[in-house]
Image 1 (tube, helix red, strand yellow):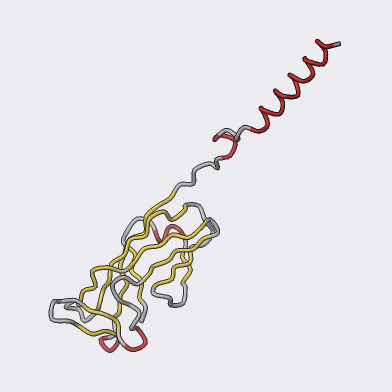
Image 2 (image 1 turned 45 degrees about the vertical axis):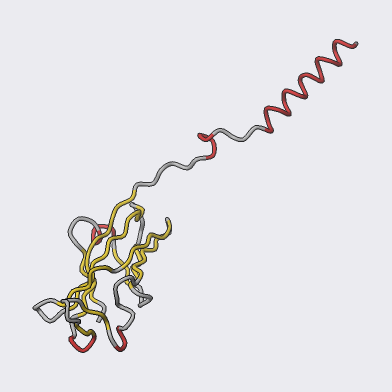
Length: 140
């Protein structure tokens, strides 16, 4: 009788200890999603929408005052959100102001990609429009 009770207690203890361990990483991890990088430029093409500085730089003005170095570039999908920012804004000889950006970690295989620059209206793109060549986004 004591042997049976001890065996039952040992079995119950083993089951408790087995279930109280943290799950193995394989059981809790999700499969890795492939990602890509979206790189390109935001263009202000109306000379009234930006100002130039004495060093070849530029910044949005008036209704475009939020298009400046450091402004966010957000790409939203059903798979998540990826963010970058505008950098190296330059006034070019073609009378445009261009700010470069790079957004890493954009998930592949999504139905639609919503791109928002500097809290402006979002624009929808397909994956093939955002991969490969540099993307040019006009905001004026």
